[in-house]
Image: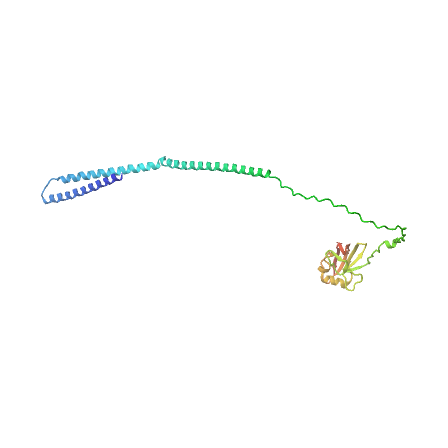
Length: 285
């Protein structure tokens, strides 16, 4: 196809050359006529015209064939034959991959079967393994009985009569009951939730804020003392002296007095008088 195009190109060149020659000759003829010498057209003129016509026809044929060639190429591109070939190629590759995949699956299943067989064989070997023999224990003869030691002969004598211990009297059996004093004094609730027994005194030697009155072996009541000096001490720091043992009905003030509304209640628990119920107090000027 390239050779044909080359030939057609040469024809086109020749035609154009002939056309140029004819035009040149026409120009010479025209100049001669202007000079007054009339002459007839020569053979070269006709030959140039024929070559020009052939070149034109060749150019038209070249254009027409080029158009047909491009139309064919476009038709081939648009036709499904090209895509069909590519689809066939892709389908062939997919088929090959599926075959490889099936082969791999088959090999994997075979390996799984072999692994299961190996596990069964291993289990069978473990089950049929003989138990380890117990070590033989050397039998030792039982120890021979030893003769019992001779019992010393004790001379029998009459039993000695011991004087009976005197029975304790009723007064000796009962332990002395510790009696609580009628009044006890505390400066503040020194332990969480109550008063420690060691902090209580019977005879105060300094101002004491609370007066405790025992009402039984393990019960007592308490109240704030009426001593003005002790009350001034309590009002100087109500949080430290009063808050742990009393409930307020009004706000405490520095120059006020403490008025008892109800006594608090205590219960003895080991070494501590535990506050069961706080005392109710109020303040007045």
